[in-house]
Image (cartoon, rainbow, N blue to C red):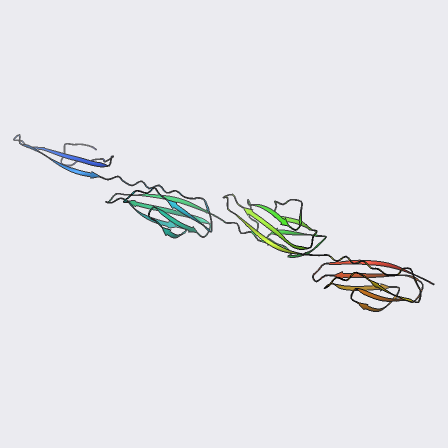
Length: 288
């Protein structure tokens, strides 16, 4: 590089191996001499980091560079936590969304070194939550929604033990409950970085009562009759009578005295152990 006839010289080294520098000196009397020195040209490292980016917050990834025997590797990470290093590889946990870097200095057995850096995009990890009741009744429908909606994210609903009414890909869903037992609602959320998450909500589906009043009608004025509906253990029964006098109530039965001719009604509201209820009504006719 530059002049080769001065008192110093600059040399570019391109190829690893053994090289020789020679110096020729001549004075004004015609006396001259040559000296040579042998150099060892080492290969400058060329690290190249590979690994996942973008990556979802809360995930762990391994980053590597090609291994060269005898070389040493010094890793540095910003925005993440180093879990372990193993010579030419590093394992990093990325706790939160944002940006980070993975950098590497590779040294050979002497003083030659080189650096590489990989910029990391740490994408937000969806954490969906479902809003809605956990106890429902058969024969009803209920709505469930995403607690915190993120613009641009996609949502998909699934239900076991019920039927989705309408779309299953919005930020809310309507579900029809037909069968008593345990049901499960699942919500899947993903973003444009490929980060996704699924959450489930267990639902208790209670059987909606179905009271059916039986008893005499028509009835003669001055008579007493007991009316009943099938008994379901744990359910409660609320009776109401018009046109007659209630003599006694025993859970799923009512005893009524019909004093005068005309018409009357008997109604019952049956409730289960939660909030499911249903009504039945019987119209009674009394004659002279």
